[in-house]
Image 1: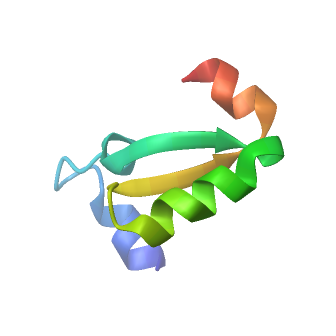
Image 2: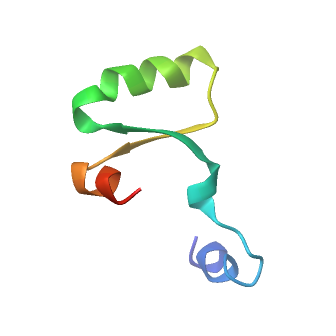
Image 3: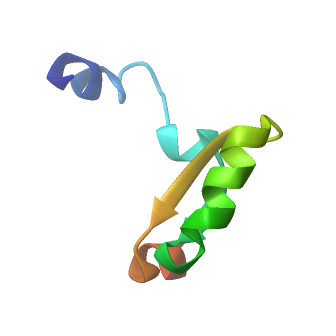
Length: 54
């Protein structure tokens, strides 16, 4: 894992761009339903302060 993290910059990879949907902890049920449906890319469950930054 550490090797992958170290290569993100040289490879110009931005994992945050892969996340298509973000949900707060209060909506984790919706996040899991969306993931299970197969109609999304990557789904992230975030703390409220992380949602405000994005």
